[in-house]
Image (tube, rainbow over all chains, first blue to last red; front, side, top):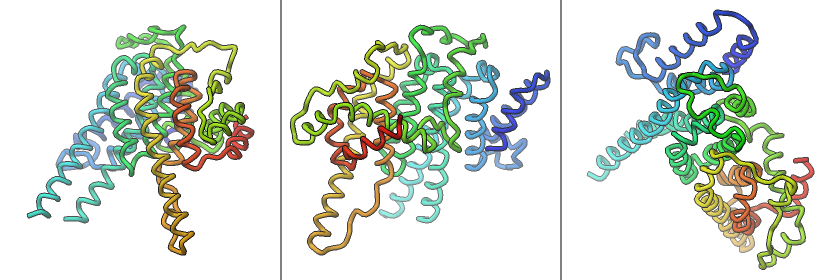
Length: 106
Length: 258
């Protein structure tokens, strides 16, 4: 994550027309990490692993800090993704906890 | 099966923690927009997190960071960056708060880093230490009028924006959880002391996860929310003292915070 942060800081300082392209590519990969489309993850099931999700969240955090206005138009999408993710992970855990307790009780 | 569930729980916890830490960054990026659209959902998430014993440390830190982020939205700039779905530029408010946030790995980090921690506590300490006599009286059982928060910056009227004002409605609940955390720690310490005095084992040698963060959160809220936090601080101080904060540490933190 530190490496990514430093890269973004360097890129941010550069006056290059490729900057937005790099940001966009990073954003796409980050989205893929959460959505788990399997394109870049090699995950046959299409589901993203916890590691991928975690990495994507960290990357989002860095992008919010170091990509300037690039994230403005994507803010809604990111915020909704992040908040939805929390809810789904919580319910996922409680679902398995419920299954476990039911199994144990019987 | 048990191992599987535990593994799953640990794995999911990492993600939940990351989400918790990302919320203040989202707020810092665009405080007004965040307050308008996502504050209620985020506050519900964070309140649930600080109530969860295993995750309240990250939750308290995130609450402090969130308050700082929302407080950075000045009243003067209210509405300036509310509607930006079209990507209109607003370098002023939008990224300033995001840059203010520190660099703790994987988290927002306003409270992070040793100097940040000490400064946050130091601010609360400064608030209370300015009225050390009053604090002492309070410890003896009489609640004085603690005007400390108002005296932090007496010449400056609160100029919080809508984002910070929207956050104020969650302060009572946050204060309640901080109080519970401090009281729980105090009770455990008392039990431990009684047990040691009776020749028993030390029951409470370790600090609960989240206890120190609760104190830091109170300091951060004092700094960010200013007078809106004052009534809650008055209610909280006895519990915080009972929960391990001392007048001497107030003074030392105050000096460090400066």
